[in-house]
Structure formats: C-alpha cells, structure tokens
Length: 383
Image 1 (cartoon, helix red, strand yellow):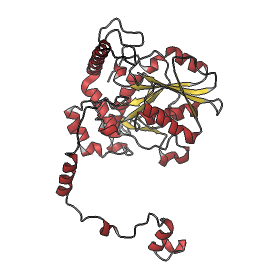
Image 2: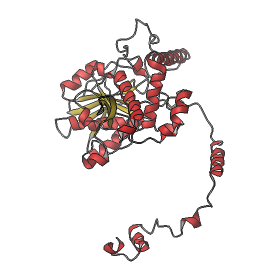
Image 3: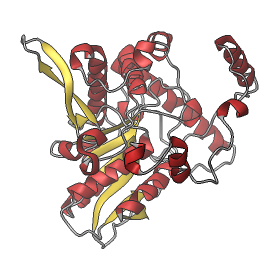
C-alpha cells in the first residue's frame, strides 16, 4: 500500500498526513507513566470520586432527580448482558433485547397517543432537532418556509435546534404559541408541553391552525406528566419527542438520557431511528425483529434520515422496565405526588410574596378529581 501511494515507510506517510504542530515527537512509552494494575486503577478512581461534592440539583428544564428501583439497578444497569448491548442485528439471538425495546416503544405510543415510536434517540434536544428535520422533509411547500419554536421550550432544546438548522439552511423563529401565528409560510411548529416553566396549555386550536396551513405540529413532552395530561396525539400533535430520564434513569451529570420520538401514521417512513416490530418466525411462533432502520449510516449513508447513529438502548430498556415495574397506576401516583408537592411549594412561595412564572393551579391533579382543567386527561397506558 505504501508503495502504491509513493512512500518508502509508514513514518514518511504519517509525516505527510499528520500536521507537525500536533505530531508527537516522542513515543507514548516515554510520555505516559508506567501501566497500573486493575486494583491500582480502581483505588485511584475511588480517590478521585471521593473529592466530589453531591448537592441537590434544582436545574429542572427536563432534568429531574429520580429513583432507580434496585431490581433494575442490579439486573439491568449493572448487568453486562444489558449494558454492553449494541444494535440487535441478529434477531435469533437478541429476542430479549428486542422485546424490551418493543416494550419501550409501546410505552411511548401509549403515553403520547401516536401510533409509531422508535427505539430511542440520544436525548430530548436532539430528538427535537430531528423532528424539525422530519417535518422539513415532509413539507411540500417553499424551501424558505420557517420552523417555529415555542420560546418557552427548554433552552438546550432551542440551542440544539438552532445548531442543527444552520447546515440544513432552515430558518428558525421563536414564537409565543398562544399568540396569532406569523403570516409567513412555515413547515412546522414545536411546542413544549408542559413548558420549561411548568405551565400547561391546551394546544388544540393551534394544532387545527397549523394543519390548515399545511404544516406539522411537534410536541416536546414530559413522559411522567403524560400519565395525567391529555396525550399530544389526542389534541392534534403529529410528532411527539422528549426524554425518558424521569423513568428511573439517573441524571448522570446531564446525560446521556434516552430520547424518544413518536409519530402519527404516514410519517413513519421519514422518521429517524430503529423500529422494532413483532412478526412470526419460520415455525409460526411470535418473534421480534428490526422492522425499519432508516437513519443508519451503514444502510443509506448520505440518504439517511439522520446520521446520528446513537440510540440510548440501555437507558431506553431501563425506562421501559421502570414503567412495567410501577405499572400505569403506580406511574400516575408518582406524577400526582410530584404535582401535589409542586402545588404546595407554589402556594408557599406566593404566600411569602414571591411571583411564580406559571399560573398557580387551582388544585392538585389527583385520581378521581372531577375538577381537572380541560387539558388534563386520563392517559390510557396499558403497559
């Protein structure tokens, strides 16, 4: 190979390829300390970890403390059979992982009331940017059409959307989704439900107007909130994205967290991600397999729907098992308790003379509450 390229040695080739400003003048052995044993490395890591100071995080904006059930911690997060799993290309030896991912998709479809969900994405912000690209691909109008984003979406979501839009030549405009929409042409609208300040709005009329103008509506949602709120698919969202972090996934210093995307029927061929389906094998027995994987670089390369080939499979599996461990009623109880505590905190802040950025709810959302606002529904999770 060197001869064909016209070089006498590998050193000569490297000198031509690697800039001298970054090329190492010494071998690694002369720079690195002597190798350490496994026990020595563990001791050093423990020493470094002991310097951490753990505080209560109040960052919010899609990042919330959660409890990972010990049964999931021991049997999934700490189990090499799960945490080293990669894409299940060989279904005959991957039925367990495929079934777990199928359960994840089922949870997402149930809570969002949209018919197709993928087998996880990187995080909520990335999923929102991919939803923008999806709506752009599906749009039949002008290339100059805008993508409108709720100004009360999570700040990291807005930032990633701007970053992704630039190379795609997409113009992004921040809006108040409760105000009249721009007269300019747009291909998609993204709303945050609930928004980054905790406010919950009914976007039914917005969905109607967006569809009347030939565009698609994307909802960035909180899965735990969707156990109590009317699912986006029921009030007209075409796409729903978000993070599964609240379903038992540790915050992990900000990530990674399994993102999700679900779409209505008709958009599944243009969505990014791997889709797990249930079929039958040669003997007629139920079997799981990858039904669709449109975004993979190794399949479509430059024609892929996305070149982000990172799916947080381990964390998606954890969140699916978290849903099954608690069940629909357990998830609703957790959500109701969080809402009740938030309500009491808001009342206390208002009584102390503070202003809060979202309207104080009249009362907590509880099971059997007949006075729920119209946008608070009964999620029909079957998981």
